[in-house]
Structures are given as C-alpha cells and as structure tokens.
Length: 136
Image (tube, rainbow, N blue to C red; front, side):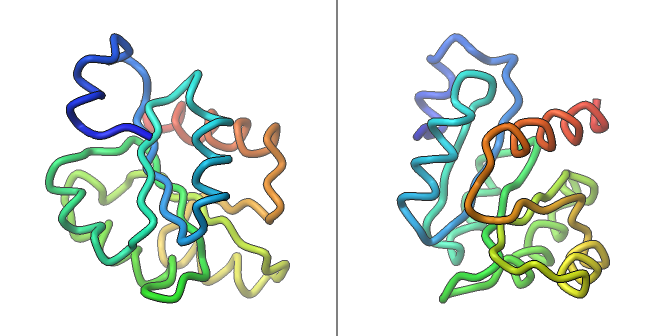
C-alpha cells in the first residue's frame, strides 16, 4: 500500500491511481494484491480521513465500501464531489446488497458502477478498465 513518497519513487508514474476505501483490512489487502500490477493502489481504512487525503492525492478512480461504521460509501460521495477535480471521477461501490434500489441510489449519487462481494477479480478489473478508459 503506497503513500505519496513511494508513489514518486516507484517508477510507475503512468499507472492510473486508484483509491480504495473500506473498513476491512482483508478487503483492502485483496484489492491491493489484485490491482497493484496495473494501477497505483492507495488504501484508506478510516473514511473520516478522506478529505485530508484528497488534499495530497488525485485518484483516477475510487472504490468505496458501501457499509462502514464511521461513514458509509454514500456519505463519502459528497466529500469526493466537493473537490472540483473529482466532479466526474469514476466511483465503484463494493457491497453485499443485491438490489435495484441500491444501484439506483448509488447511480443518483454519482457512482458509475458497483461490485457485489465477494469480489470477483475478473469483473472488478473489467469494470475498472472500462471506467478508467472512459475518463481518458
């Protein structure tokens, strides 16, 4: 899991930056392992620190857990969108909820997609690649 200093020295400056936010260390570790070869992956387990982190980091895509005790993924969306550079940054939700109502609300809040837990690596990577390409 990278920070700004390692990012600058890693030799992979052209990789898209992904910020994954989840209260589960296991999920964050899994996301990092699945994505580290193609992306610079930053993780955050304390969603309350998002605003401070976004002052130093400009992700190309966010992966947000929907259900976290401190702030939900839905509550993080206005924080993300309050940064002008993130008005249109893709957001993918991680959830165990399988409902059209969830997806409709996530879309209204500005999410571009969602992944049902447990994470299917192939689907996750396909969705990330689709939404990163749309932003190019």
